[in-house]
Length: 342
View 1 (cartoon, rainbow, N blue to C red):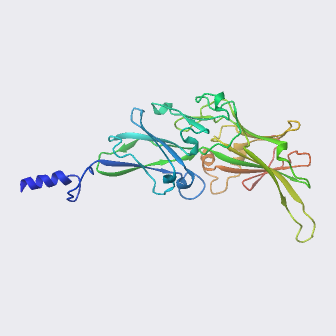
View 2 (tube, helix red, strand yellow):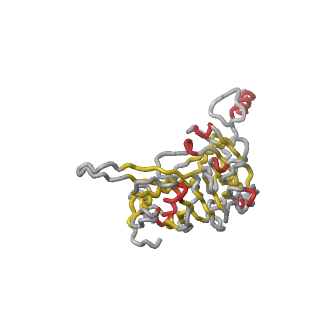
View 3 (tube, one colour):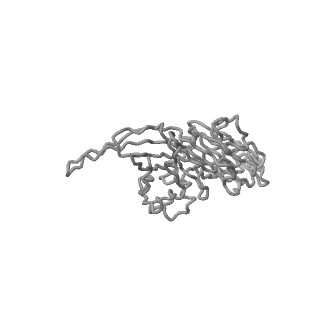
């Protein structure tokens, strides 16, 4: 009778029930869930926007003890989780992630540096011609004309990976580091506008990022629009007077740029190609700050910049392609310009 009781204890010593085929369930199970809630939309956008995960596990000494890469359809499952079972002994760890297509191994958008310790784990934006730079410098001081792929970052504080039986979940919250900007130049005129008549650039220092997502000071990057096109809006006639209102002809240019910081001094500039004359120049962060809605107007500016990842800027030009700098539309919000010296 004593022998039978001892056998039962050996078979199910860490389970509440007697299971004859019990094997290995005494070991703790570690699972990591990633979330992208840090935006101005609703719900977790991770399954819809994140196409790749690079997860680093860091021990108490700051050493990277495990790195995992995952991509593909599995990430689109709302129940997606990273399984770390039997990979780590119990202890305290931090989790760091670079995610998105821009973080994939071999990506031409960003380079994730090989590192032994967390403090050396960095990410750099790559220029259009990788042969012109080293991964350490990235695109600093150079030009980027292509569409860069999305990049996300996540870092936790120290987490306790317990030795207790059962499944232990750890959450990593992500911040999106890439922004889409569409610049619209509109002119009330009978003739179409030529997209090739303008150069659109954004200049900002954001080529290199630390493990904690802070920007490492470097030379500015000059971003060029990766795509531009023309179009028009027919305003029709006045419903009461019957007068023809006219047609707005326009040129649109689209950018994809890296992380915006509140003290970055990022500037949007537009030039006429025929004579290099500057059409407009303004501080992106200053004016983005002015168009926050009541629902997010009280949040810190840096939080707003990290949550907002799409901007549409509309400027109006006169017949000589000069900016009528009395107002700007940003994301459908109108700014009345008090000082034309931007």
